Length: 576
Ligand SMILES: Cc1cc2nc3c(=O)[nH]c(=O)nc-3n(C[C@H](O)[C@H](O)[C@H](O)COP(=O)(O)O)c2cc1C
Image 1 (tube, protein in one colour):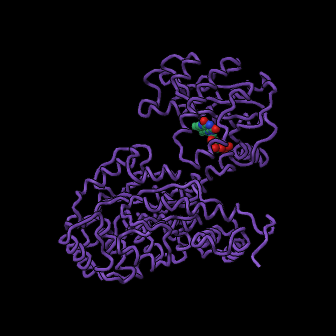
Image 2 (cartoon, rainbow, N blue to C red):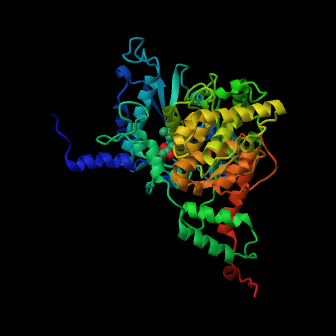
Image 3 (spheres, rainbow, N blue to C red):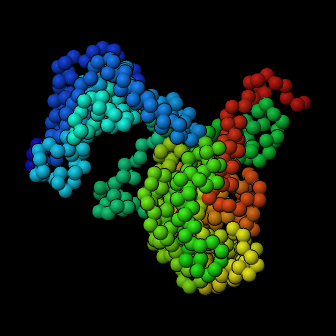
């Protein structure tokens, strides 16, 4: 067996890996001595490469005029990116410095010649991308060596690649892989700046390690993780001390006691969820629209054809739906999740492809899905919550799309609350009397057939659920486990919340009822959950629209608790 390095040398290797940072602030103007730069470039040049093709070149740029032109190219793309961001993200982005082209004495562009070595380059023939990967490994070597030399490196990717290539005089067959700003710094930040700035969180290693197959998460030497069990175990009751502190602060704020009505309760619940007072502002916010199709559509419960689900998904992604308009107004991002649309969807930015199956089965004929599918959808929803929080979101908003999903919701609500189908079934998008009678009958037949046991929430979801219901339940559980508020939309989210709360009663602490939908089953649901809706406008659209309208209310409640002066601090006399 080859000898391992002595302990101190191993420690140095791990230290440089842990302490490498992307640096954008605090560069010193001191020039980088040629011998230091030479050592760092030699380290880069020792990187592994596909078929030993060494496809990289290093363009070392110091000329001020050239750097000014390059900074202008990056500036244009920075502005275009910023223009596309929703409110809170845009404010956070404004505070970020994304390049140090002029602040550093040296810039280094790392390129890739994807043709070097000819057609028989080992490995590249089957995987052309390996040429680029090899150049990236050269960047990694450079970045680590630079850290050891006390040199900060910042990677700038706000470029049109060909524009930058032209500025650097690259031939057409050579691509820019990385543009690096390099200079001495006084110190290296202990954590990535984007983490410190609250833009994103580091994913725990245990989320990233799978045993044998994707999805079977397990650290080496440990049993595979039961993700759903882990999520459920992480859900805890709200913090009573934080809630008491919030209540007490509300009473000392410069306003008559109780004058913010239900918003005072919202702020107290946010404090309880966060475990501190004041709680963090619930922003940025992201709406996740879970879309899926339903086998029960075959029973004629809606006049809308099933294809509308996929067509509306395209509309959400194109920004043309009501939820897009409301989200733009409220400064929230919209993400669409395909958990079971009965069509193949094109991969486009903003769409998360997480299809469990192409629609559920008809629940009047058998279970809508298998228990394994229900569990997979629950885990998918929880993972999406987790990833959206890791990406920096501090408030999640539920959305849904699925033709016939009010029928599935009515069945779920009856199963979880014991409500009569006639009281829990609504007219959905608007149906005539005959269709309505048929819809109630469909729900009755489903309940008769499956004899649901509300003590077995996964079984209930499998019997009636849409994949979007099960995924939304997981999304709510995921938010609760991370102690991030989740604003519920209408009857579909409500039905999902019933499942979530049946699995983990403390999950209610994370739930804020965005609105009361006109669907009768929703009122039943809200009273069962003990949630008070914030908006009541007779809406019945779904998509997340009612929840998004409530977002500024939840955010205002948190901000008031944080920003409003108290009688003592402001020197305002209290009522005697
Ligand atoms: C491929 C790549 C491109 C990047 N592009 C940019 C960029 O354009 N602007 C920027 O500020 N940071 C950029 N970064 C830096 C990352 O934001 C940074 O590496 C990440 O936040 C982790 O921080 P750390 O490198 O300090 O661990 C880039 C990083 C990589 C790997």
